[in-house]
Length: 107
Image (cartoon, rainbow, N blue to C red):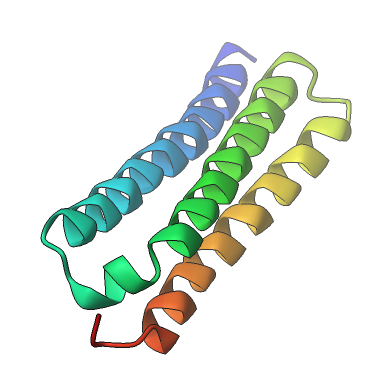
């Protein structure tokens, strides 16, 4: 039984750390693109900032769900929060790609 609980906890920890790391990587990449004054990043600066906010919220919601699943495994509410958070995060990641594709390449 303890190994089962530890395995579940480690699985949830991987989710939290993975989303946090990927969010920080996206923030770094977008920040670097703006810092280097890349035309596509400058043209889409406001949209990219809003998308990053939605991705951070998705990561927070999924992390909250992971904590809820760890504390109360019998309650499906935590799993629902994880699904909603991950969906928000993935939509945000896809939106970054689309915004940079449609942004004008000249400032």
